[in-house]
Image 1 (cartoon, helix red, strand yellow):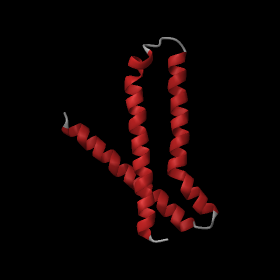
Image 2: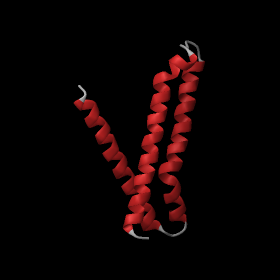
Image 3: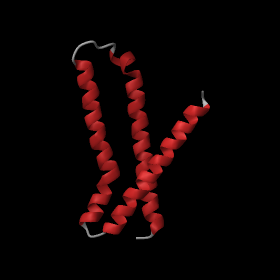
Image 4: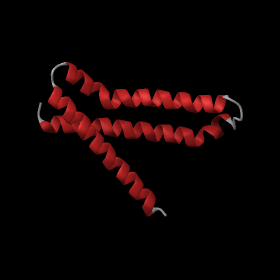
Amino acid sequence: MPKTKIIGYALLNAAIAAGYVMLIALFMTNIETIVGPETGILGPTAFLLTFVISAAVMGVVVFGRPVVWYLNDRKREAIDLIIYTIFFLIVIALIVFLSLALNY
């Protein structure tokens, strides 16, 4: 498979991951206005369940295709995809941090 196609998959994976993180952040920011303040055990339970579900979703988004490729003896492509995906996630994180720094 050409490197450009692997890079395209990595960029797509990183974009999906960033979009999902933004949706969860939006949800977490507005949860109190949606369901009201929670002082009992349900608040922390909901938070931890959201965290676990998010970890599972991100695991599939970031590692799903590379695992399939690795198991199909496309080891080099799988490793490249993971490396490029992590690289693009770092770039997105740096852009977010830079935009936060410029807003202060």
